Length: 510
Image: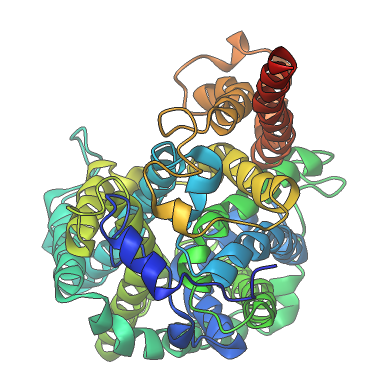
């Protein structure tokens, strides 16, 4: 049995360093460098979960009709569910010290691993774009208070934003690119102050909402639109199921590439306990802040403001506005680099480990993040949850199902660490592709495709059978379960073929 933190010996390491699949960034982390304890993982999740998208995620459920406890419970349940594949996928990172794209080689093959790595990287590019837009838009909205001429009126161009908005976005994008160029170490100070900074801002907003709305009674007594006699009476589960799927999709990316972080863990206990403490509780707390403040805006302003930047622009004190802008920018910048650059940089580097560096991978991430026009993804709650979060959950759920089925069921947690870095080793399979994983991925994504195309209005919903629209609301669950089962079926069939061929040869020889 391999040790809890396995690493190749010096001779084996020297052997794989010359491989085209090896680079210093993708190499297994040696035992002496695995220093992350339980509180490091808890702090990582507190830092990443306390962010503006979490606030927007929570408040968008209020905008969809939920009351405060329905929204918080939905988010807590979603994070509790996604915590399971998160901790399972983290196991291989901790045991073998390998990052996500290298872990994918075991199931998808040494070349095929680029498929899940690039799918996950493209989603990270989307998140990078969203976070950059949030930071740039915060700068624009607060500057517009001081310079009203920046807001010309209705937007008529095809991009959907004004030149001033784009310039603010480009400015914040440039700061991100500069930090990437300087290297990941330059973000350490920002990460250390980021979580308490944004939590403090959230608590200040909560205190303001308490005072202006006359206490928490009016805030938390806002009825659910799904209650009897309300506008959406009897439609709760029609909204709850895709909303829960969206909550899982929120961290579906990290549930795959968590080995990028868990490879530095001292033990399995540290990563398991740290993640369990840090993720669900922080999300629930920040969700409560989001829904309470959003509910308060309904009372105070007569409309639901689900973007915290819109709430902050209602304050007229220049010191408050400038302080809020700086706090939001620092917090967003730190989260963006930590959550949305490290992993896609590794994923892009996996394409050509000897040629693509961290800086180049970060630049690719930034360019794609700009090209997707992220302001359209977060333009409204429906697009944010049903199109973006549920949509990419339909892609990433099957990858998680395949990885967990391969590592825990088929391999019983046993990996040939050295061969993961060999182009002609055990994981070469069929010209570098693990066909069972590829087939399982494709077949698991296909059932969700009609619903996704209908949701983004590429095909009319009236032309899509109702069963596919319903299935899409369970996109992550359906994709994960189907891929899990299909992979094991295909893998066992593939495993029997060499055994059968060997038996025929022996029979012929006898």
